[in-house]
Image (cartoon, rainbow, N blue to C red; front, side, top):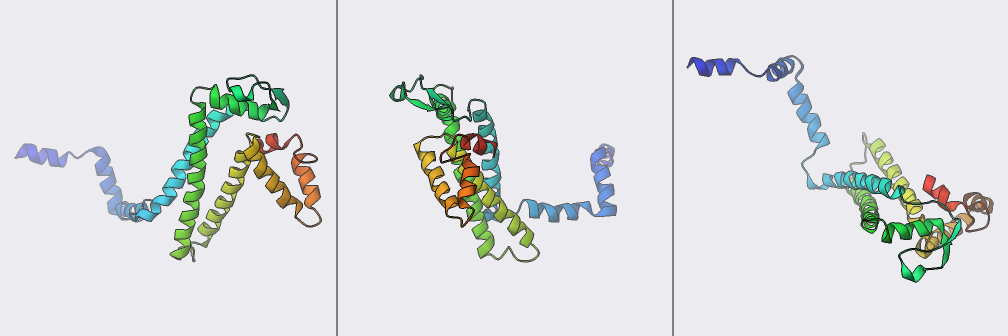
Length: 214
């Protein structure tokens, strides 16, 4: 009997401090209310976590790809493991992309992971914003969260476009050409914006390095 009583009396020091603090500050109830906001129990709130996890994957794979990518439009003659491109003149950016895909161990896998994580990131943000919109969760006092989320979505699309354009291949070149047409359509200043962005007539010799910085 005395042993059980002694065990009950000798609670861990951390637990005793927590009980003391809760008795005076009500920490348990405060923490419970706020933890439900941070980790809600409805499945649709997982969309935000999907965005977070995919964003982390984008950062990790992007840092890895950065180690091997050369953001330069200087022309070189390709001599690498991809036989169909042997002896063809191309930019250093495209040559390093081929090197990542066919010569760096796991490079093509990391490129694909990076690619799909970026798509999931944008899709997750879009679906998340639609959930917020159709449930009316953007109303006061959460309108700042809505504006912040919309800004993140726009920035995500913009940086996704710049990353998509870095390989300097035919696919990315088509996207860049489309953007150039959109810039040129801006009244009065469109031509000047295009010249500034590309460093001269399209495609110029600087846009890969500039998009890489972005």
